[in-house]
Length: 427
Image (cartoon, rainbow, N blue to C red; front, side, top):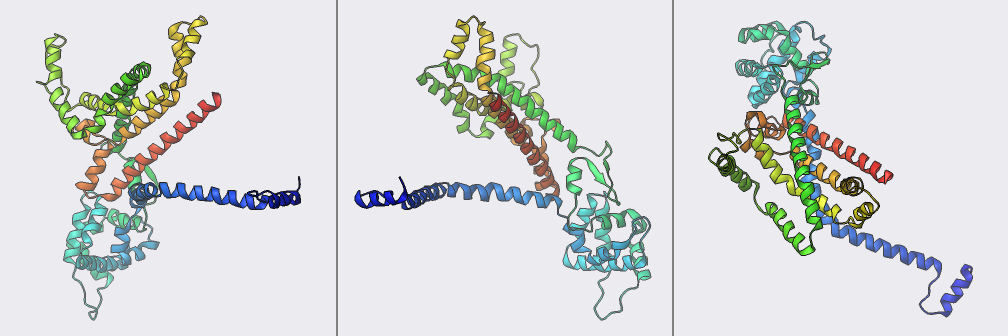
């Protein structure tokens, strides 16, 4: 039937349309549905954009920004552009530094400059602050200080200006961006010539902290999986009414503040707490166990808090698995355990993967629980990020640590998606 016949039919039969008009109406209806869907999710998308995407996007530039030197010592940076970074620079560099430090003292920016160089050379902040306060700010009409005079003035203020390492630190940070914070977060350092090397064991710490963070998160995830899998399986076998009641009990922790739960664990795990009294009463221990301010207390509390995040994905998958599969395998002669392991368990892999990933990622960023229940050797990377922000006011280092933690999360998520695709293709 050609288009002319359809047009004639549309003229004869009311309510029919020509093919072109029908396509336009279908596209318009599809467009209206898409706009309606976008309008419904727009508030949530805007909220996530403002509270999640924008802060993360601002995280990465702060981890490589390096504005203190170039904004405070512009003349010195310009003079040191062609410096070989091996010997003491010439008199013109001393003259430029004296002028820049005098201006920085007048503008109140000498402190931030000294703090930035102090990250690379411990004790350098004092030389910059003292020099900035001691160098006189010259008038515009006065005769400018010569290079030789500036050199002598700076050396008289502090003899350390005769050491090349301070000039190397200035020259190395003469750009608006630097990998210093990211390298420091990995316990690496960069010399004056751009070569990267590993920090000495005595001053390296962040790699051990990252290893500790991943180790604690992994142990908590395994504990949640070992405890959550049988519980989720048991709930999935219950009648609907009883299953809903048990799920309410599982979800009760979501309705309780984390601080309240941690305080409850402090009461339970202390030397005179309920756990130790029960163990002593049952003669399982001869003395109270040390369960607070160590790794054991952190594991117990974090597993309790994270367990619902493991149970929910597992339960949602297990509930959709027909029990007839296992019964059919048993009826065909399979051992009950073998039938469960080879027929039922593989079908729960999506729930295991989702729950494991969710718990592990949430555990990576935990701060309150290790801070209150753990000792100095149980603090995770989030504690040090908070320390950098609140105590040392080192936003660059805090952002670098946060960026590395976020990158590790993305890597874990990409690995999970890759294995999930492999499982789907094999299935």
